[in-house]
Image (tube, rainbow, N blue to C red; front, side):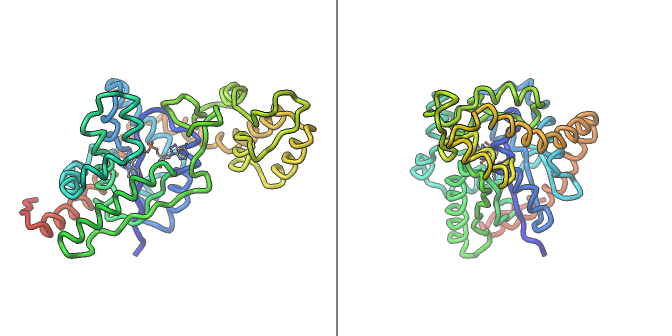
Length: 328
Ligand code: TYM
């Protein structure tokens, strides 16, 4: 039997190359080796202010993009979190095994609380819901970017506490699966690429938009003039070549950057070309999925049906282990 893998993504805007390189690429790489379950985690998105009228379209667009990346129903389960109510039920149970102290240490909570002010309880207990997402499917492997490592550490702690309480090894301790692009920086070359910071290149961006955005991509900041020598290892644009260009191209560019033979614009042009070549097929498949929204909705429904079957079984077993009754 294949081992089970779970991951989730928030419908908080456009899918960007940080999500893609840091997580979604791994979501697609392991489709054959694992039983893969992926969720659009809309309940998580309620923790910060959002436009409720735009939400249905955001969810659908994200589903279309994930399908375009290759996460098709023949190969994995793709569903919307709020379609499977067991996530919140397990979250409550796990919250009774999590200390406030531990949650207070969460970096993302601190950052978001500062950004949005007057944090709500959902934002605070967010990592418990994330643990429930994973443990509901008893998944041992979770492909994510680096920013989720602390949350995964908490999910291991929660699993351990549950197991101790019921004297069993019922839940596995979920392990993160990282890509080499575990933390992709944004166009500013300083902060993590993120939808909310607007420093991103979206997977849906066409070549003209990528070209436009790349103009403001920060390179080696010490390279002020075309004639200044550059240092590729200190250049975010060069690091992106690592994700889109061949080794031969990188080996060609690096010394020519150091000798100032090649300028930042030339270097960006090669990157744009390679990036576009990789993203164009995804955009094309996205356009195809976008032309059949009813089919995409149906895929999410079917995904939820499959997820629910597993989720209900887990909850039944969890209730039994805790000495609770379960009627369904
Ligand atoms: P989210 O929606 O912010 O991001 C989705 C995935 O993309 C990764 N990622 C990045 N990786 C590298 N560089 C970046 N700049 C970058 N930006 C985003 C994230 O690490 C993530 O893997 N809490 C999660 C969603 C979630 C979840 C789960 C994940 C809810 N339940 C259960 C795994 C398992 C989040 O907000 O991801």
